[in-house]
Structure formats: C-alpha cells, structure tokens
Amino acid sequence: MVATVKGMVDFKMKSIERKSLLYKSKVKYADFCLNHVEGCSHGCKYPCYAYMMKRRCGIIKTYEEWCQPKIVSNALELLDKEIPKYRNKIKYVHLCFSTDPFMYKQKQIGDLSLEIIDKLNANNIRCTLLTKGVFPKELYKINDFSENNEYGITLVSLDEKFREKFEPYSANFKDRIDSLYYLHKKGLKTWVNIEPYPTPNIIRQDLIRILEAVSFVDEISFGRLNYNLKSSKFKYRKEFYNSLAASVVKFCKKNKISCHIKQETSGHTIER
Image (tube, rainbow, N blue to C red):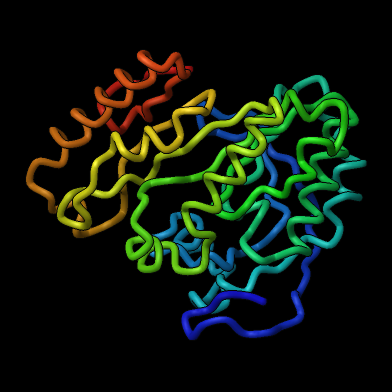
C-alpha cells in the first residue's frame, strides 16, 4: 500500500540501484547519513524540503511520483563495500534526511531498515533514526548494540486534523508516541524532533502540551517552519520562535532532557 493524493492504492514497489549510499553530511549536528529509499509515501505538505530539492534537480517530476517510493535494491551490498572505507571516519549514521526509514505501512522499507541498522551495529557503528511512522517493537532486541542507537519521531502537533492536512499519510501522533515510549521503557535512547513547528496563523496550539506528551525522552530538538508562504507572512514570526525556543530550553532544563535549538530558529544554537 502507498499513499497518494487520491488515497490509498495498491502497487508493487519499484526499485532503483545506486553507485553509493553512505555520505558525509554538511549539516552541523549530523555525521554520516544514508537514504536507502527514493521518495516518501507520507506526502508531507509543509512543503517537504527533500521533495522540493529532488524535483528541482529533475529526479522527481510530480508529487504523485514522490509518494510512490522506490527502494534501493543494492543498499546492503553498497554498505559491505563502504563500511570498511569509512569505518574510522564515522561517529554515527543517520537514517534518514530525504526519506523515512519506517515509512507508515511500508513493511518492505521497514524490513530493509532493520537489516541496515543491524549491519551497521555489527560493525560497531551506532545509528540515529527519525520517523513519522511507527517504530517496530523488535528494534529493542535487534542486536546487542541497539542500546547505543538513538530513536526519534517528528512531532509538531497533537491535532489530528493538522496532521491529515500537512502529513496526510503518516502515522497518527498517538501511535508515534506510543512506539517511542515502548522503546524508552526497554531502555533505549529516545528523542523528539519538533520541527517544522507551525506559526499561529496556521494553527494555534500549546507547545507545552506537546512537550509534556514526550517528557520521557532523552533529547528534544526544536526548529521553525521554513519555505511556507503563510508562515513567512506571520507578523511576529521572529518573536514567536524566540519565545518558544526559550520555553523548550526551560522545559528541558526542568525535566533534565538534552536540548537542541536549531540555529536559524532563535539566532543561536543550543547543543545537547
């Protein structure tokens, strides 16, 4: 099953091959990364930066094509070649920046993600993961190295109507939180990415309620909404994000949670 703008339709997942998989990220808070899928069936409409870039480069032509992900069929073979090459340079590998490792209702993608994580961990390489899907329970026992990984969800609201509009085919917020809490109870490191957080002219909501819903995590990362015309027109945009960033820092300090505020959000970066 895959989500498109017309709803849920059946299709046989297509595949592509790549010449490389691991790459060094240029993002300050990241290290090495990989994207073992092209596209994402969640169909986020913030808009999605990854979709915009792929379309600008001509790799993806339409939103409908983006929502029909293609799996990288030679991902495991590439890892076997690239791990020895980069092993001494890698601090950790992030899954993923331009797709989702546990795409909602995409078992084939989730199964490949588990194999990739296991292979990296077997080579003493830890992983950080981020999803708008649901973490499978077997993550806590995938291998003896799994406790060194960090598992995160994106959560910018608790309002399901908002999700249906901006993340139409992702997992509902409660299921995301529940799957993360399960891993937390198993003793694994968990985190939440509250980005892209919307301005009040898009939705009025209480950030503290969101923070309280994930107060069990080890780390919270917070960032603003970019590339959205309506958000950019919000009159008090700068003041709004500065105020929220301060609230996140205060909440994290009170609850002994590591905190990361994206640099462009409040004019400065607060690292974990």
